[in-house]
Length: 381
Image (cartoon, rainbow, N blue to C red):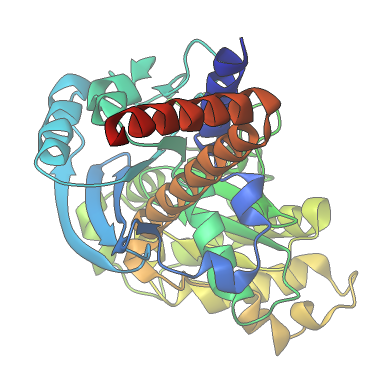
């Protein structure tokens, strides 16, 4: 019975490692979190899958999530073919933990039957797709963690900022690309609640003078995604998504884009009091959007909050591009793998500690020692 209990405790500990980025590792001191993950006397190899709406990226890092040693990119096509290619790539690698960050909505709770699934996404063909199953994730025999492609970089971006400012406790990560997503870290932990944040679909008031209506078939037709996602912007401009980069910074569309992003940022400020907002994604490759968003945010808040971050000088360090640049999503997924491995090691350590501290275990050990002594004594005679 005691052996069964210890197995259950170990299983529970490892499952805890697979439920987002766990409290055990999140509450470690910054120096401990920044140490390379180790397996025995060698640096751990961490694997990441970043599943976006258009592309899917994979990577292996050695020791630290930022130390990427190999990577590959796949087109996000039909689920079976796409996930099969990634599964084959992973099968050719050696790794000790796997972090999977996916567009959503997803089911990130291990207690639920659809854990590891993309659920109610509008992306054709991807609704109710078993991502972890399609990747064969559990067949690799390593800790696996599954979260959104915005919660993951929210954690890694938070840690990068907290390494400079230890007083920091919160961070939001917004990605603007094929879709719009918002990840949130509060008190050092990623927010899940009843599922996970879906701030990219918050309803938006129309910008003053904006009469354009998004023609995309979206569940929430007046959400942020309807105004600032790459497909929406391409539709508004009458160009392909690939041609968006050719538009001038002076195009009036970018002022509207900045307004809607600023409204989203204002809502994050007023609802969560978040201390930093990181905005990334393909659309934000247009660097001129950052000062526009900052200016619009200050105009919307209208001096209501008297904070250093919300001044003309301070807002430049409040709304920022990702510290990890275009690798924000990959580093986020690798950070999840790093934490899952640490939590799994801690679960095993605790299980061993309980085993050694139990009277039953000491009795077995003493009995074994006596038996060995008897056998040695017989041989000596």
